[in-house]
Image (cartoon, rainbow, N blue to C red; front, side, top):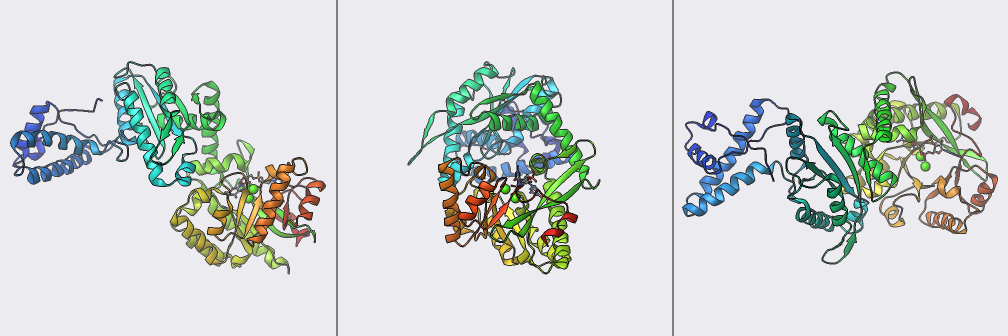
Length: 506
Ligand code: C2E
Ligand code: CA
Ligand code: CA
């Protein structure tokens, strides 16, 4: 596999240092010296990096020189210098090239105007595999897969592990004798094999996004971003398959970019606001809480659904400021409602899993509670089941801390994702919200009926409240009432309302 190798005049910055001879020897034997170019950084930084690497090499020399006979020493020395200089480009787990190196290959191709095809792929449902088995097994799968990929493709294409379960190939005239199509066929053949590990076997499927440079993307800096988008399309639409960057996708991407740029100014332009949907206790026909739902009335795009722009905000990181805005406004509104009414008022707030990863999330929430002088017991945070996928200790700690603040926790869209009652047991959950897709089937599918009734019963046994979402008909209401569902949310009672229309529920 080709490296970026350039000759450098080591003496320039190693003069006077005894071991420059050793390094020069390495250069003269290899004829070349691998020079790490620091992406976009100044020559000074590049130089300081090289110096650091040289220092590591010298350490090795000092350590080994006395211990080994000359020929063996030289052989090992060459290997070691190569290893040290390559470490920055390699993924430790799999030994494939990493994302960093991928960027270098892009840049090299751009500089020489050489076209290439970027093939980006990841494993479907890998998180689930990782969690259902364990992380060691997950790592093993990645390693076994990487070895197979290497056996099949290493001589033909550049191979990378660019992230957790994300891999990539570059098919380039420079080194490839196969076409992109042949490469994809080989990828599918390798990945669709059954993988036998020590104790289990695993069937893997992959989703592939394909981007041509410069045919599809003129600026090499955008290749990754576009490829991620194309791969996501493959994942969303046609599991276990390949998606190419074609006209239709181009338009979709343009719309996405347009939305992102508009969203960036939405808060400043006061285009975001909250509406509140009452959640009704069916036997008394009165509200038990209000769910705060975000609305965006964009100057350029009109009304955009949160189902569209929230994922976008999560992709771009805007969810942090938007999420803060939502908590701030919802608590402000809660304070207002508490003043207006003698009744106990509760407000539900949707929280993106990403927000939980912020170091100061708990602190921020506490500050907002203090600022608006609201009682935390009146606040419900709604999370989706993805918090279970992030099955790590810091996430559990954060959720515990939220509960310690006095805030209640509800699981949103229950039943659509990763639901398992065992997870609920580990994380003190106060309420489950049964997803609308189940409610839609109530009274039509005996299977769904049984499931919903069971969720309500088990939830109650575990001490949780059950809320059903998206109730539109009296029939649905009556079924849920009979099963003692605690809360009903849906157009049957009310659509989400602007804050000045909530009075009738106070
Ligand atoms: P969600 O949390 O499951 O919210 C319920 C969605 O169902 C809301 O859509 C609500 O308007 C809609 N809905 C309620 N009752 C009915 C019904 O009877 N029929 C029908 N057809 N729909 C009903 P909305 O407001 O468009 O929100 C969509 C999703 O966007 C939300 O789903 C939530 O995941 C996300 N979202 C909304 N606001 C926020 C927010 O402030 N923060 C975060 N992180 N996500 C939000
Ligand atoms: Ca919700
Ligand atoms: Ca929901």
